Image 1 (spheres, rainbow, N blue to C red):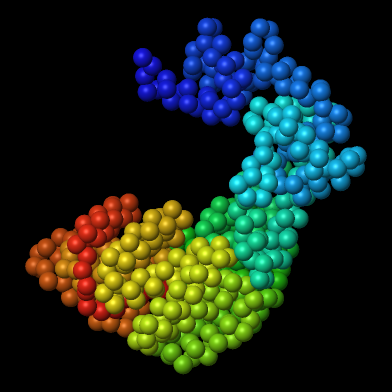
Image 2 (image 1 turned 120 degrees about the horizontal axis):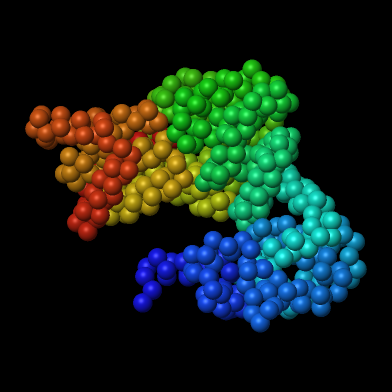
Length: 522
């Protein structure tokens, strides 16, 4: 009987061969002369390694390839530069660029019929190549001297797509742009890798600049990482778009909970070249809000909103800071204009989220719940998952406060998982603080104290913005000291384990609880 390690190798070999029956059969035939580990280690040479009766997998594919007419062979070669496939309009644009005769849709359909290309129809039709086919096609591209032209065509496509997303993400068509971006992330990743490998800074900047608006309120942490990588590149200092890129990177650092890095990048960007200083000021507003510097957040937020070339979220940040600073009138005055300029669903969601926070602080729980629900629905429609997450924190605060404890515990379980997955630790600590208040109402003072204390010691946690009284724990002084010491040294993973265990423990026994106060700051 094969052991677990061998079964794992078999599964990995089958996966790497795309489950292609012929390829798997040829691999099995090699077991008479090679071990599983040997085959696995040489799968990058599968086209020539795998053979049956003297005919290699490469020769088998070549036989089908040679049966195609010349224009279909050429299209087959050129679409191979898209590592995660492409849609029909993109295939048609490639055919147009290559001046291929006939109908491109018919051509791609024939490639599917010939089993040279796979098609997925669980949404807009998407065409992909199995790894073996793609390797063969890339080899033929090189042999025909077309590799450079095909790769440059792919890179132009990536930049044009980023430009379209940038132009569309702040409109009523935002949801469509989000769908396309998420569908094409793997291809954009490949373009990013090529730009960086070839030291094409201008193109890398164009790509990040085009995608930054979409990344702002989404869980697109990979794009955040690209911006941060550019900020570490010494060449960015003298680039014409240095200020904008450093501002984007600062906002990315904030989303990851790196507040000191946020401020350092933003202040560096304010002295850099280009007209992107407003983005640096917007990042400073977010950092000030998280640190509890409400006057600073108002000042930076209003300044960024007045300098930005198009509507964005800084006015909402200033409104939040005014509300958390106790001036609900000023908060409403700032949030009102945000509704007037909100063309995209995400900006509308931001307006409604801020309204929910103002209502919560004003003690109007019913109205706050309506605003939070509206914000979450809009964020879902636009793909703004990050914004939907922070609105959910507020919604759970209100629901748990009205006695819907089971709903609150369910929501906290999902949010804890989401913030951990996306690295949103500023928001995670706020979620854990609010969970601590709920646990306190359920009589679990030990867990509540531990979560609250862990947040107090976290450098990336937001300042506490809570109109209620501080929690009073019914625990012996010695036990409280012990819990606080544990919380001060517990790592993030341990804190999340404790939170999850408490959620599971209390969920089945959840019962109506008296209203409680909680914060939902960003």
